[in-house]
Length: 67
Image (cartoon, rainbow, N blue to C red; front, side, top):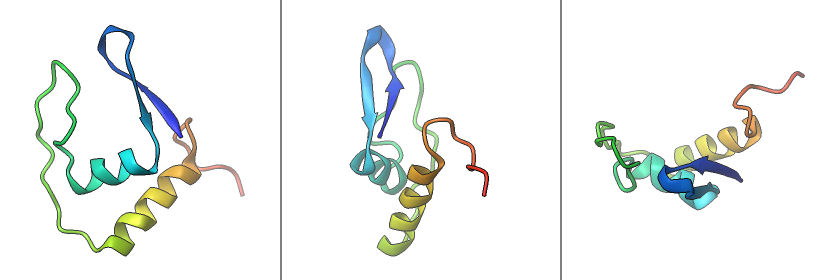
């Protein structure tokens, strides 16, 4: 779970539900001052789950951990 900074000191918890929604419907929640430019994709639910798992494994730093 990550916390993403949003305007006026608010945060969004980037948990599995948030990441899944962001992948399936990228324009569902747009940060103030930005416009939705991401195209929607028709992805298989297993592919979405794999992407979310990968992002969760990256962790809050966003880099692949050493092996």
